[in-house]
Image 1 (spheres, rainbow, N blue to C red):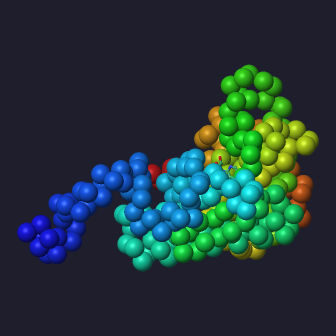
Image 2 (cartoon, rainbow, N blue to C red):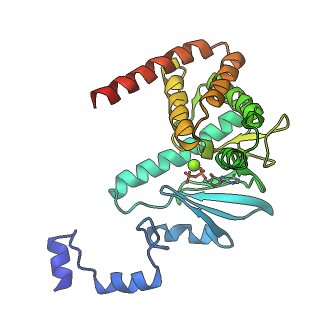
Image 3 (cartoon, rainbow, N blue to C red):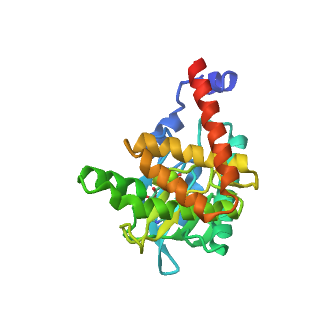
Length: 268
Ligand SMILES: Nc1ncnc2c1ncn2[C@@H]1O[C@H](COP(=O)(O)OP(=O)(O)O)[C@@H](O)[C@H]1O
Ligand SMILES: [Mg+2]
């Protein structure tokens, strides 16, 4: 009977007995997916890896790849999406992430080394930046400790430089936030080794407009995550401008995008 009502209405909420059995075996994760499900196929690859972080888009595992400390980013299937659309989006993001990382690396921009990509299970094995912290955490801690916020100036300069270099390679990151930048040695300063991560939404474009929007996304994220950092972000933009001949056109576009954003918020 249950079988039949399922067939008539595939979206019916009545769980089949088999589903219930599966749910007991594989408890639901916060994202609504099963701990093991269609992503079962990734299980052999992830054997020996430990789940470290869970995001909306991917799970981050830590383990080894050919003896080296590795982070595995697994883009698991999203059950709320149509399976074919999900497969297409997930595949595209995995491809973009690996491709942009390679492009940046060739240009001397610090990104984790990609060790191995499995396009069937959508897993990326990459260098584990052991001991690194996100720029977000670093700024938050510095602000909380009441340290001189000027100590973050060197970091802002470095961020401006690395982003100018990335844009000069025509790589648009697509999701610039302070959580998607790591400090390799866990601290800022002249020796700060800033590493860019999370290139799943990236693409290539030479258009100043696309680069301007990239910087706008960062500005929005930066100022909302870190209150009272307007002058710090301006320092980042100054360093960005000093580092690239193409920057003035980008900053002009950034101004236009800001204006558009403001008009939109005024209209409602
Ligand atoms: N190669 C790496 N080395 C060390 N930590 C990493 C690495 N890649 C990701 N992380 C950590 O995992 C977090 C999430 O990774 P990210 O690629 O940004 O995934 P998401 O798409 O879920 O945001 C990062 O903010 C960082 O703390
Ligand atoms: Mg991220």
